[in-house]
Length: 460
Image (cartoon, rainbow, N blue to C red; front, side, top):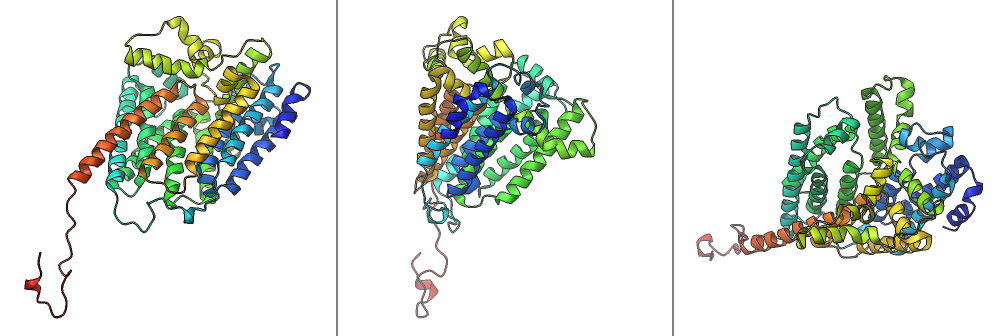
């Protein structure tokens, strides 16, 4: 963290390529540290959170280190701007605060010692587990059906690209953004007990959806639910091996880049394209750093005052006015209340950034404290020694909400939390019904028999 702070202090005197090199090294150290110190390794909640934030903010830097430029059109728009070096250093500094918070709250309990109540020797599921997974299945399938209706209405096909998707999303009356929340919540809840048939069925449906949506350009919409799902499932101690995970990730990146380039007519399949496809795919994923550069320019260059938490409270105020008071917030106020609206108006649909939003609201020191606090909360939640089904569900929801905010504005948080609360409330009532109408366990026919006891005399 001290190195990151020093880099930020002298950011204006360092050119982009050396700063990208130093930042890539620092981010790699953070990732390696959490992979080593966390009891659950690369599938711990802490590592999952930090790696997703790294992918969407810093994955474009290795290409800049190697070539001095970026193949991504979005990244290329900010490489030559005035505050790029100091912005990169500041983003790394803010991530180091998040990483420190996650590390401070980590437990040294190894997975084999954790009493999670869902060990591999448990043969029967609980009423709570069945209820949570069942509700998750309903939410997940509902989200997939909504997205399918959107795709059919928009006429999306196997040859469509991300520009086609954006155009369709702007002109549809189907709540496509809601579908992503429902899919994410459903997948996370299904991870509470992955042995149930409906849990495995939902995962299979999500995989089919991903095979089409990921090459289409939906990165975060696929990665966020998937990573949150694995962060919950690892409590069952049946996560994939790290080597297999890395291999699958590289293959997915290669396939994504090849499909995206060939589909848009930017090139044909060649050996050089295949070898460079992971680098090209990572460069495309790292667009959130552009959001941070833009936001940093408002305050560092233009001298704009900080929002003081308005964009974090704004979405809750909008939700309160809309759903409780049944009034609509004035349109002119939404730009200051929701950061993504201003970003879209000034720069286009380039997404959001948790680091940009925290800096826009609280400045450097406030952001360091804010992000460290988020890390501590997530770390404490993930490090509970005894974890039951309800705690597992909330762990997954917390990870999902955090990851949505990594790439989007804070406006996603109220929606995720409200729908998650509704899902868990429904699961709680269903669990009560399942316990109330639970069938009595039938004893084996030979229970109570001894060699001297005739079968007809055993009381049933």
